[in-house]
Image (cartoon, rainbow, N blue to C red):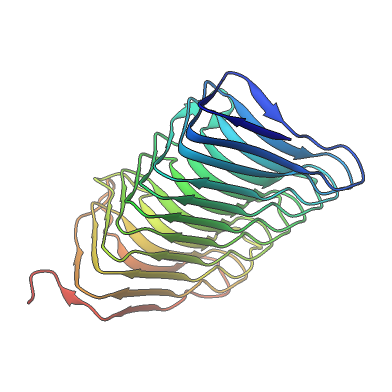
Length: 321
C-alpha cells in the first residue's frame, strides 16, 4: 500500500496493513514532502496474526507530528515476526502526549503469547526531535521472541521531558526473549523531568545495550523528578544479564536526581557503564526522595550476578580550564 499527498492529516482514523495469512506481508508506505500529522488516537499500523511476517512501515515526510495518543505501530501476535518501522523526516519530529490507548509515538512490539520477534525501529530527522508528555519511541517484547533494535538519529537537538517520555527497548515480565538495543545520536541532547533513554528486561532474557552520542552538550536534569535517566537494567528475579551503557559527549551535566546507570536484580550480571567526555562534567543535586544520583551501577538485594563497572574517561571537573 502506497499513499502520497501534499499534506496528510490522520485524525481519529486509521490506515492499516494487518496480516492474517501464511505469506509475508508487504509494505505500508506513506510519503508527504510537506507535513504528516497524526492526532486523536489515529493509527497507522501493520499487525501480524498469522504465520507470515507482517508488513513493514516506511514513512517519509517533510515534518512529522504525533499527538493525542496517535501511533505508528507494527506488532506481532502470532508465529512470525513484526515488521520493521522506518521513519525519515527532512525537518522536525514532535511526539507529544497520551490518549485513550496509551502513549503517542512510534512502536514495534511482540505481544504476550507471540512467537516472533518485534521489529526494528529506525528514526531519522534532518532537524530537531522533541518527545514530551509521555510520548515514546519503543520496541517491546512480551512473548518468546526478542525485542527489536531502536535507532534514533537527529541533525538538530533532541529534547525529551516528562515522566513516561522515552526512547526504549524493553522485555516485559512475561517475555522469554531479549530486550533490543538502543542507539541515539544527536548534536545536543536534553532530558528533563522523568524522560528516559533505556533498554530494560523484567523477563528471563537479557537486556540490550544502550549507546548515546552527541558532539555537543548533554544535559540530564530531573528537577527532582525520579526516572530521568539513561539506563540499562535487568530487574526480574530470573532475568539474564543487563546491557552495557555507553555515553560519548562533549560536555556533560547530570543534575536534580538524574542518572546514567545500570541495574541488575536477577541471575545475570549488570552491564558496565562507560562515559567518555571531551570537555567538562558537572554532577549535582538529588531526587525528590533526597537520593543522590549521577553515574552508577547497582545490583539490588537478592540478585546473583553482581553490578557492572563504571568508567569515566577524558574529562575535567566543571570550572577547570
